Image (cartoon, rainbow, N blue to C red):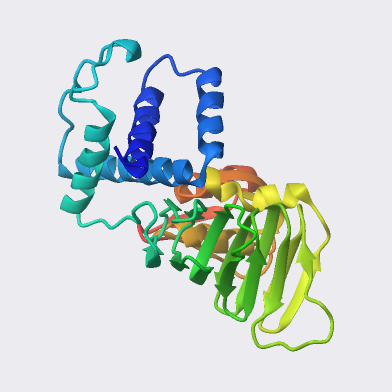
Length: 323
């Protein structure tokens, strides 16, 4: 058996174990250790996990699921049974082909394009072991070769867990800005010429693509946030809490800290087809705080009605908020 096939079967075995009712913290620690042992392990596991979610979605679209087969306890499973890891891995791949969904294969080099729709979130593995989480309405292109690792964020927002490789810096192009790292965790959000970079862990260098400035570009570390528009850029005061709040979308939440209602509505409108429309003036400048489900705009409107006594007009496509 080739090393790649052995790794893929091991990844499928871990996925099967996680489905069992007896999964424990000790099991999770073992999985984490296996993932950390080699980039190939992460690529295989994240690829199959990503495919597993896709298969679930295809099944949901095609009708009610069939009754699940009765699985024997893990130690009693036979290598030639229907749930053999190789069969699981091949089954996921076959379903993905049937659904016309394209995933990067382990070790595959070249260009890939990833996109999400309104309210969508996807986690995708790159060939080098890097993991990328795409937020709502995001379009991203990736090119991983034997000599370089580059990503182009055309729009939207993405969170990166970059596999460490000192011989190949990981470069994210976002409009006029270029973000360069060796191995770290950070997010990049792009809206036209506006780019925001937030660092969870490690060091990130942010440069202007067309700049030849004499001063060295800023290097961001844990808790730093850089906000840029065109050639202008400012680094906000260090705040780990702020970075965590900005990344709450990874849990399906929007977190606000004394934000204006107008700004909050803008965030909700990124995730929902039903849009919030805020009346101008005092209502738009109302300050709010808290965490809310990003895709539950109706619940947010009800909270505004109860907490602030605001009027809510719902015509099915928009929620107009006024006094």
